Image (cartoon, rainbow, N blue to C red; front, side, top):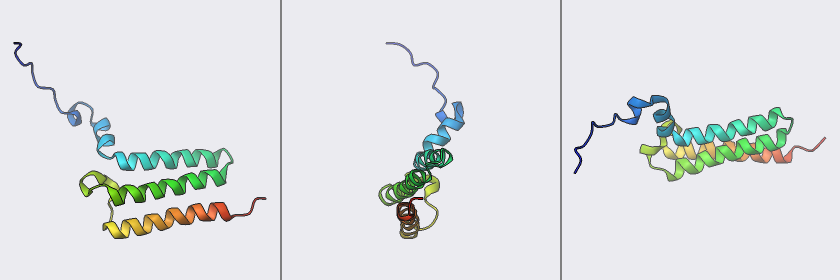
Length: 104
């Protein structure tokens, strides 16, 4: 039997930036999807980009609705009903507005 070696330092000590991203994974996912939408807008595909950003907000709504508060991180700003209502309404409005603008 081998003797146990020195204990590894926790992740937040070894790699604090990575630990922060992992702790805030719901927000990181939403920001990554919004970044994809912004890239599409910058590539002159504004309608598709706005729909992607609206879907990111709807995804944030689902995460806020389904995940416990302990795992939400910075997506939990207000009470759950207020966060779900406001984020869901903003995401739905963004998707519907992007789809309903007539093409030029």
